Length: 275
Image (cartoon, rainbow, N blue to C red):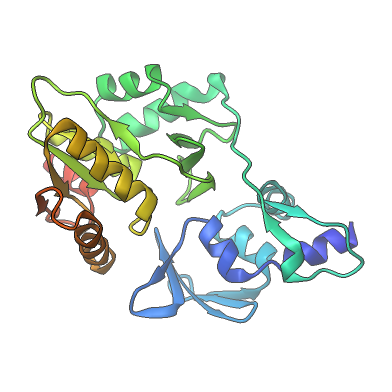
């Protein structure tokens, strides 16, 4: 057990930040940003500038970002990392596992209420995604969005987002009334749902971030298959601009791409503001 604790503490801070759903700041690679967090990294030390609090090791970091206790932090790290038997922990001996959280049907009503009441999503759209097995609730009532062999998680009680497994296809809503006029690509499942709610005549998909070439290519092929143009609907920030540039490189003039950004940072904020 003591050896396991040492392994958990010595998991690379940067890898743990990514597992917790934080993303590198394009302007400063030593800083990671997420909902309400701005964390600097120095080796295995970290400091959250927004909370004016720091610490060392991955266990402390998980406790801080997920606002959980020591035992829950170990469970989180244990569910995401497989440990090879060893007398002494080394970073190269820690292998990221792909554990997808199991569905807990009893929690769905709580998760559904969050998506509708806190995120402003249309109940009919949420229920359609649930019926199509695109969304479910896990044992913590996190909203779990399916990306083929991977999932995107969004916590309903705290500012938590993350991913599990390896996303093999985008989270997609491929239906609308009549022929779609475009195929929009967003950065998150909630943004995808928000954009689709405001644009009922478009197909929409999320690539779970802004740098997944595999899922971008998947979307490009879907647009070509359905004979529609692409809408680059990434966030209104530096990361969104980088994603748009990469999309243009991958498209290579195979299909027309139009850049459309929300007035606010992302499409869910835009949806909430419109309401």
